[in-house]
Length: 200
Image (cartoon, rainbow, N blue to C red; front, side, top):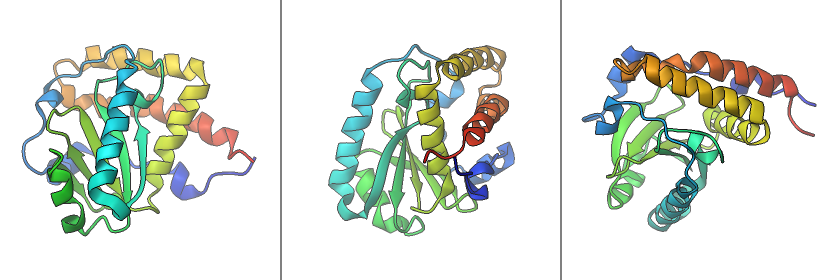
């Protein structure tokens, strides 16, 4: 098994201060509470519909579209929000993709040029988070590795699900702390992913 390069194994930890700077417009209503639901097969259908419409409006600008996050893992409890990684050639050229995505109801929510140019949009129903990255960004690679590991390792799937439910209860009065609170278990799981090495 080959080792993963350092840019893949070093995970970015954002801070509340960075989030405040990055936020564009009003945060979604769904951010006011963390609701963890049992896995819903309909999440995969929601992704498929979103991918189809994104490809239709962006055409050749799309380098890749992937379902990531907890809703992409069958059997995993999750917030009922579909996370999608969209790869485009030039993330900084917002005029090339934001107007087209706006016709689908997406609005820009986060602009984080310091994090591989990351932009995040939210759907009109606030049930899709669309993450826009350049093709060379390591974060989408990590997202796929994490997704695929949980799909193949039920013990870590159960660990992650139980941790998310516990943290949702513990941060009920401070929902903004939920994502950062997950970092410890996420890093533990990534340690096992990277220790296993790259498949031949």
